[in-house]
Image (cartoon, rainbow, N blue to C red; front, side, top):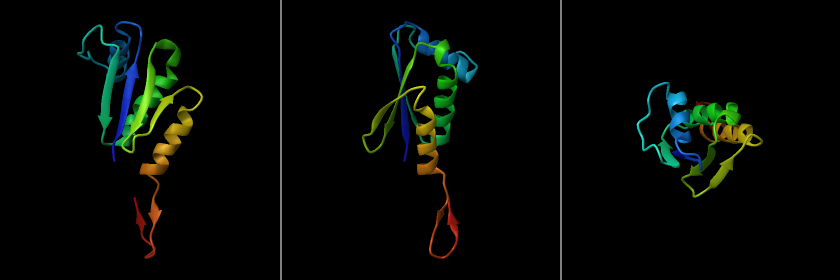
Length: 105
C-alpha cells in the first residue's frame, strides 16, 4: 500500500524552495508550479516529509494533503500532523501477533 503526498502553494516558487530545503539539493521543477505530487511506496519516507514541513510550517507557504489508496484525502495541519503520523505508523509498522505467537511486521 502506498501513500501519496501533494503540496500546494499560491506563492510562486515556494514548493521548489521547500523541496530544495528538504532534499538538500537543487530540485528541478517548473518555477511557477503551484502543485507537486509524489507517491511514496515506503510510508516512512512520507512521514519524514510530513514532519519536515510541519516543523517548519511558518517558513514555507505550502499546504500539504495526504492521499491514501482507499480514496481517503486529508489536509495535514499543525494541529493534526502528529495524529496523521501516529496513524501511518499504526497502519504500516506496528507488529501483528498471529495465532502461532510469531510477530509479523
